[in-house]
Amino acid sequence: MTSPPPLRIGPVEARVEADVVRRYRKATAFDDRATEDEVPATFPAVWLWHPAAKAAFDDLRGDDSLIPVLIAQRFCYRRALRIGDEVRFVVTRRVDRAAPEDVQIEAHVEDLQGAVIADFSATYRLFGPEAVL
Image (cartoon, rainbow, N blue to C red):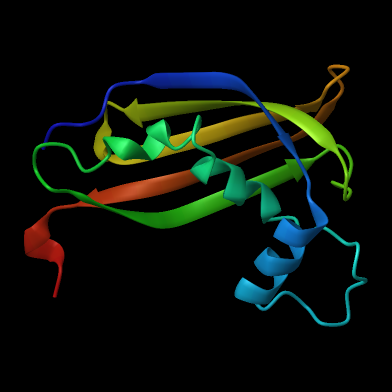
């Protein structure tokens, strides 16, 4: 299995748009008791599909037609995201040499003045086609 190389993307600027949050809440069945303007803690995951950031996933399949499967994620907030926030984030991708089938995607999120808002990470395990039932 050939692991993808380390990668750094960004900084990328984004905005927490009310409509995107609403669609995310609907798609993820976010708690209906939450207020309309509450941004789910897992919302930053949508930024991994930002055109500038999705390169972290574009070559995960590699030459072996590997399938990335999410096995863990972590969100660490200094403050909650709010509708209208303008943010800047950097995405990094690492592979542990001891476990080359595991890929770590991390993002560091700040406001435009440089104050840290959050750090989050996701670990994907790369499975070959033979592992798919």
